[in-house]
Structures are given as C-alpha cells and as structure tokens.
Image (tube, rainbow, N blue to C red; front, side, top):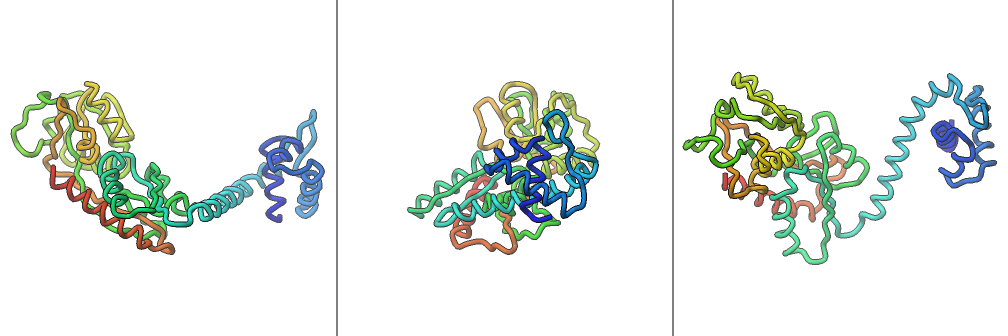
Length: 298
C-alpha cells in the first residue's frame, strides 16, 4: 500500500464513512472512494462492506488496521517533528522538566540565564519519565531534565547534580534532634506513599524492602508535588525529593534527609544525533549551579 492509501484506509476505518473521512482529511468524497478502491485492488482484498449507510470493516481490514495504526502513528510523529523543526528555529531553547524540578531549581536557573542572554527565549514543558524519549524524537524539546537516563534509547546525557529523598511532615509531628531521620521514625504515622513515582519511587521501595520498615500507606501519589501538598493539608507524612520539599517549604512544615540516605542524580538528556548546542550548554551550567545550591542547603 502507498502512504496515501494507508492514510485513506485509516481515516475510513476510524470514522466509519467516506464522507467523514473526506472531512477529516479535507479532501473530496470521490477522491476518498477512488483511492480506497485502488487500495483494495492492489491488495486483492475487500476491506469494507456497506451496511445501513456505513462502511463496516471486514475481518481482513481489522487485521490490516493493526499494522496500519503503527505506520500512521509514525507518520504523525514525523509531521509533528517537521512542524516543530520549522517553528523551533532561531535562538529558542526548549526544555522539558519533571514537575518536581520545575518548582525551584529550574526557575532559578532560568532567571540567571535570561539575565545574561538578552534576545534568547526559553520554552519550558512538563515531562514525565515515560514521555522523555518521545518528546525528543518528535522535536517537542531539545533537552529533558530528568533523574533517569533511558538505557535502551540512543540518547546522550550530561550530569547536572545530586539530590536526596527527604521526609516531609508537619512540624512537631515527629521528634528527632539528629540531622537525619531514621526511616523507622515514620512507622505508625499516616503515610502518603510515592513508590509509584517513577525511578525515585523505585529507589524508595527498594530501601523500604531492605530496611524492613512497614509504613501505614493511606494515600498513593504519583507526583512529589501532590504528596507535598497533601502533607501541607494535614493528611499525613511523606517522602519526597529535596527539590520539592525546599520549593514548597512552609513555616509549619519540616523536612529532613533520611537515614540511611537515599541519593539520586539529575541529568540533562538529549538525542545522540543532536548534540547540545552552545546555548544549551550555557543553560546547563546555570542549572548545575542551582542544583548545587539546593544540595548545600540540605
């Protein structure tokens, strides 16, 4: 099948009629009908049956659609990448960040960077770990600031700094004079768990299993920001990254690094075939400075 035939078949299959497919693709109905017939002829298959004014896919069409759907996704990705390349030209740096990093360290780095680089613009996007590689491939972003570096994708990375997981709780709810809070001190408290929050959640889960500490999970949060908000609302105690804890600090909320420590790294991730630009390299220097300041303030 030619690409245009794939597009027509996909549109008719999804919409259920020639007229709807024509509107979707912004072409005439006769064109849709003609190309669809060519597709059936070249395949030697009947793809649709007309029933009560609608085109009902045949069994062959259902099987073909599974493969066509993958091709169509790649075509859409190519189109988005082309648009992003066209509109992303110039002195614009596009950066995707995890929600927790976007609260404190990133804004400080952006402020310092723009103060020294007039005429430069930044586009900041929120990214979750599962979206990192897709955003890079589709040219939605130039860099992803992340804890994790995908091991199976053709990406390069630059180390930016370190962070730690910390306990976050209402001031006075836990008595501890030591500089670090033992994980066991959280037992018996209503716990807002973050074990499903990507790589950091896995680190926490591994440490809890290793230490044998059993926490009273009452709420599960996939983002540290929401977990911190729940702590501030009096729901319970939680473990979040130090960037979230410091950026959302309040007089009535305390946070303290854990014993044993649960550290992690922060990286800038980019495609191997698209090395960092000079603009990106300068911006990452500001980020390293910001992350270092957060680490020293723990």
